[in-house]
Amino acid sequence: MRKEEVPQDQSNLSKSNIKELVYATDENGNYTTTLSSGWEPKTIALSNSLDEINERIAIAKLQLLNGEVSPIVYFMELNKMDISILSSYVGKWKWIVKRHFKPSVFIRLNERTLQKYADAFNISITELQNFNAK
Image 1 (cartoon, rainbow, N blue to C red):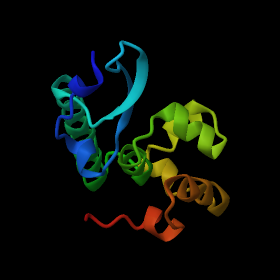
Image 2: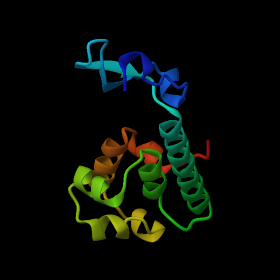
Image 3: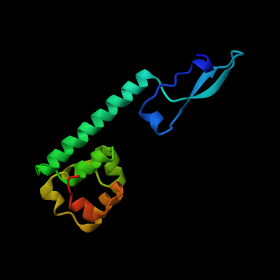
């Protein structure tokens, strides 16, 4: 693809002025780098991913409000984490983190463990314990 043909599709990323470095050929046929704000297939994939993330957050919020899960699940989804990432941040085995998803276990967590989760989510212990539907 020639440098002047590099797509500049307006996407969610273009609103934040994020550009991607891509390779293209210049007028002499030599490879060079240029910036692209994206192209339609990438925009569609990004939009689908963001929709899925927002749906997972909404489900976690509903489960939390219904008392089915602890706030850890909601904040994990909100921060775009999975169990592996969260367990590495808090220094706990994945099965222990999963156990903390239960409201009955969560309410018995000590302050040190709660602080690890709060730090991972960049919130206070109070915010973690007293979830308020926003």
